[in-house]
Image 1 (tube, rainbow, N blue to C red):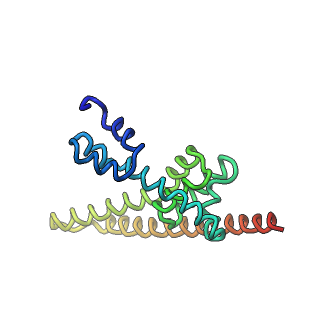
Image 2 (image 1 turned 180 degrees about the horizontal axis):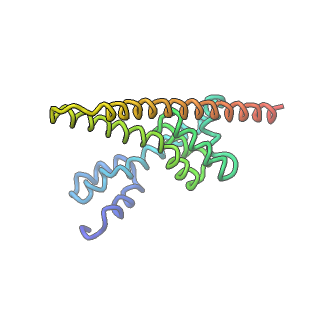
Image 3 (image 1 turned 30 degrees about the vertical axis):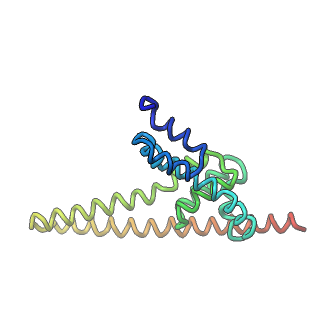
Length: 190
């Protein structure tokens, strides 16, 4: 049993219930590692949340239209909706679970996520560089050159302004797409 790969054991345990996984943890360390796997618990919670998410999407059609939008249309429409959701301040975790309940395809979801997180990654990287520059300057007890201070401050301000502009644009486009979705729903009801 010890020669089996951990992901194989995790896959076998995933056919059981969360209670079964907890029981396996007590048996042996190989089961404990497999039962503690994030993949396993994501599957357990995802399978329990799927019907609830589906009901929520049906119960609140106006609020859910943005999420449902990601699963509709062709490849490009899905890619665009996922990208806009990732750029907007919509929580990643909530959308990750809700994406399961829509018909979004994997490739547009993957590429939309990759493109949509780029602005956030740049902000995080630039902020880290700026903080490190300031920390190095204070640690070595040397002052920064005036030009370096100007570039650091201007770069940070430019990063913040760009982030705000991209976020406002994403929110605007999402609301336009949501409005178009609601109009289409009204036409179908009539």
